[in-house]
Length: 405
Image 1 (cartoon, rainbow, N blue to C red):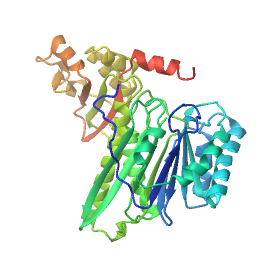
Image 2 (cartoon, one colour; image 1 turned 45 degrees about the vertical axis):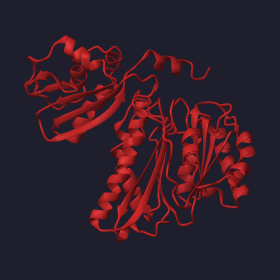
Image 3 (cartoon, rainbow, N blue to C red; image 1 turned 90 degrees about the horizontal axis):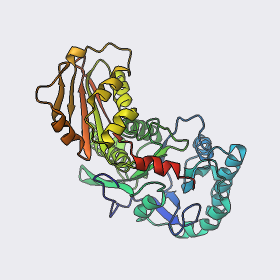
Image 4 (cartoon, rainbow, N blue to C red; image 1 turned 90 degrees about the vertical axis):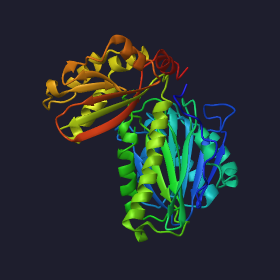
């Protein structure tokens, strides 16, 4: 059950983006599992892909196509990752592009394929090919919500966010969707995300904006510490608002980037709120670190600790597990006498000593909440970071034990 998360009821269309969905029965029955994005001519596209060296075939094909052409279509399937299949996976990923290109009268390199789902099972290309004519004839601007539902795998809820920003009297729209629930950690935190705006932005600038947005969002979440073979994030800019990012004032640029980053962060946090088997949404804030890297190492050591995560599931205020994880996270010196720890607003450790206001009953009361923040103050510098994670529950084990059966 997702924590404080509701499915989107309406997502704004983005001029220059058309979408269609179809049910190809790749794995799931009686639901859409195939998505096609069509990008208007001269749209800009930036993509961030998984750093996993055992990346899926569609990731390899997407990388190759980005090097040679400007994307016109994105083809996404759920239920099958097309990963771990060697040459056959590449053959199948390329075949879907060839088939779509023949139907859409474009070059195969103008198509970016994406897959998510079970690893190690051959992609049913015939089913995808059969659905292509219906996808092409069903393209429309207002299908973002259908796409958000179609890309789901173990997600319990669709994830999508829309917003607008007024720039000098011009309304700029941004819409994004994402999927992800398990196999989530930084390095493209299995997740897929697709975000679009009608602002005109060059490929180079769009890539810089995407890298910054991902670093502040999808790279600061983790469910289980596993980086997927298929993680992908795409940012598209159609230019159909007839407003150019390059022509904006610094203040207007900052306003747009702030709004865009907010979309990315909401999508990333939605993935954590819908983490597999989640019963607790956990924020881990590390303050007063010597460097950003130290803060990050400590925060993720806490976030990845099975002992911390199981304590959260049990509503057990076992704060010693938090300190133990922090203590092994870095070789940089930590002065224990400067450390303070809070569970939500409850002070547990004050300057290296157990706080006088803390007792087991008050700690358990905080840990019983569905949203928990651990705030560790190091008192060693000015750097800080917040990452988001989940607890580790019986249901998480059940979901992943039964995923292929």
